[in-house]
Length: 329
Image: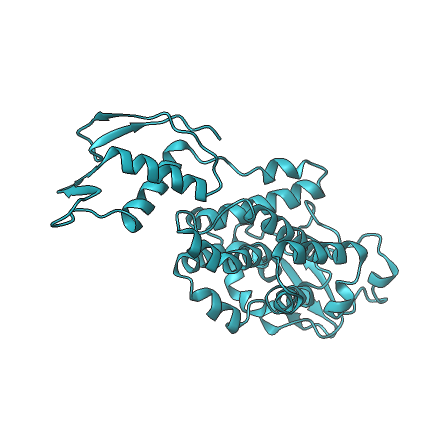
């Protein structure tokens, strides 16, 4: 027989004689010094007006609070206290926005495109972080309402006294997939309509919602690192280690730059005039001086301070010349 979870509680969390907790409004759930501090932190990192913040961040956070109530984020691990799911949700959003600030997104896009999409990428990182554990309340925890009826999160916020217990024999990987059952309780159709208008963002966001972070590119990396930082902080570890953004390899940086330049900057196989390069069957040949200058300029737009010491030698590989560079960052 499963036992109901217990711990020493504050008067606000004290259950009734039958062990039931009273549901609370989001304003009351969020009205603690720690949670108010996190909300203020999230607002500063979102860098927008209070009106915009209320629509894009405060609304989803309030809906999240009313949905998870005093449920914990785990049984015996991180944020296992009553209200741990809400605390973890706020922390991971704050961390996700902090990590997102270290990137210019989408990677490889022109600066004007990055500027136009900045708010959408920030919001997507926050939403992905907020809902990443949401499936737990659907498959890991059994919630019983007063009167004996079972509550499921797709019913909407809990409206009467409730108690909960963890399900034995649960599949720990199932909650990532179960998020798809619930995320509509947090993200409104208006928010999803807005985000779906950004093609480079929409696909990775879908992967994040499905818990397939390995397919979600940089958005998946942000959510995973934010989660690691929140867990490390809760368990007394060092969240700064999780927040340290990995440095991209020189190969990755140059490849991103070359794709951008070839796609948006260079004239290839230009008839009747000078060309920056030529396609020849499955090979691409580029003129050395323009490509070096353009790569240098591209990396500077990405916030990478760099100095090149380059030489060019003939090569029969995919590029007509091979580029050897030393990058100082």
